[in-house]
Image (cartoon, rainbow, N blue to C red; front, side, top):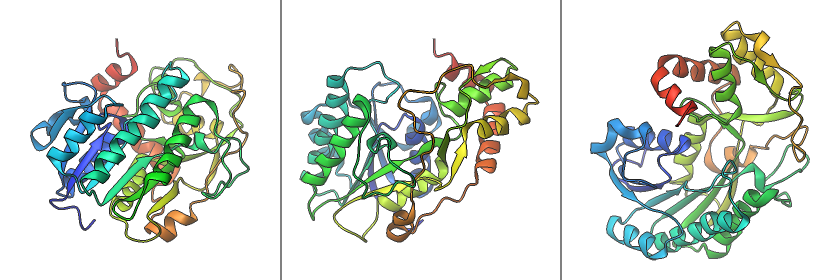
Length: 321
């Protein structure tokens, strides 16, 4: 992909699942990268690249630290991936502080030094229980403290954005792939089936939109240099196709001859979980020239192959204690 060689790029939350994949892609493209994480220790996903990156510790919100970082590094593109995730046992105030105020700190710091592009990750939680396929111009009904905080961050960026810094919020469907932590559906299913242990789940009839992490990274890279469209844009990234959760579990289980491990109906449905949710991705195609390249079956196989090939890392991810 053109235009990244020697480009100064700041990635917040680089130690996370998507962040690690994005940073490696940027390194391959020859970008000059600064990453931020919450700790001095390099994230396990990027340890082998520590000599090729500038690494700063940043805990948001912190307007002064964000300003100092942007002034010293002078990024041309900022990928703001740092966030408090829905798996965190956090209060509404904590979600707001990190996801709204932290985003404000990063954007204002990037805009002040003239960064050309600012890309933030949104969430399907911003839409809430809308009829699928969900378009970017749908009237949102954000769910939960996390969803509300991400929605508020998106609308904050819309208010703050100007011609100086082109801003893109990428709302992601259900992302999966190698290196994803325990707690998410696909890695949890893989871990149970690898060990031939029971995997209790709902009846699995709900249909969701699964997108492979490499496809998300391609979307991020395209958003980080986009010149088309308005100064501020919201763009969905997903497969655009619903798949039943029970079918995804079966894809995993068959690879381990472990279909007997799947315990359909052992857990209730989440009270706010829609029966069907998937994205319209027409805007991503028109604005970014992006479309998903990885069929679910291929992505599942590649994900399983990674878990099979990295048993020590998998053990650490599944049991962080």
